[in-house]
Length: 442
Image (cartoon, rainbow, N blue to C red; front, side):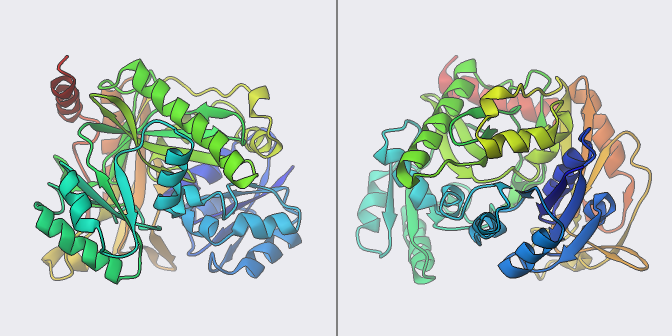
């Protein structure tokens, strides 16, 4: 019975906790969380609450509970060097060191790495630390994307046509970002459809998991502000209907080359999840960004489908022997819908903005899976925070049935909450198919 440490407190980590505890090896789970997630707590032998920056508290908790290895869920503890601190007391992690986590924590590091090793997929880009030269480069680009360097919780990217219209607007935003002390990446805007390719990596071997499409926009029809992700879906064939097989092959090959480049650049093997955000364009798959961990919500689509023992997956990642393990996923469709406070993503002066901190009731979710995210478990019940509350997942043989199960689950949550009704609908997917046909001139 191995003792395993989980770090994180979101719905992604709830899905990880479930994957760990369903192992036939009957592991005991010890969870270090920033706030108390009731789902993770119910699966854990022992929990400890604290800051992800408190490396002493994390290592003490790990040492006293004789942890075999750690699974690090979110980006903050990776950026804080939790894997490095645990390594010093001989506890390995399924999660990269602080240096290797720069794949996510520094967008300029990744763009420059891809460029240096001549890996395909990069846009035209430049990194700026001052405003000098920014206007001239903006004028070279047809469409513009602005990215502050560093962690932004999936909400920092500014895209022309979505967040600003003109090059003059772009220049103003550049001045603001640079004035805030962050360096800035200016990139060309790609036209296409996005997909999430989450890969398992042991430093040499890269294994793809089923493709997922996330929905960042707050409202139906991809309207409203970007969020941490309102939901996602995956299909039984593990691909997407708007992609060509070569798009997936290109994304996987880029990830393999990036893993090899990281080893050359740092001298250390990358061990954990390399989650590539890609976009299919008329010129093939292009790289938007990497995350150094599973996606949230995308983890909830793929982890319940994993047939291989997740504890063994982690051990093989840590040992650098991923090529010796057959990793299999069920061929089913999944739909994940996030239940959020009504005011989520809305301005503070909006009438619905006061919906956070309110009590909610969770009834019978039927066949759906429920993963707690930012909720507060008090003595008198469950309360919302200002962030995403609960991920509800439907799993079935086809997408329509998976969507129906997710919908029934969402309707069991009572209170001032909202969700996107259109995730996994035929109409939304057809819109993406039509868009790709148009730009590829198929």
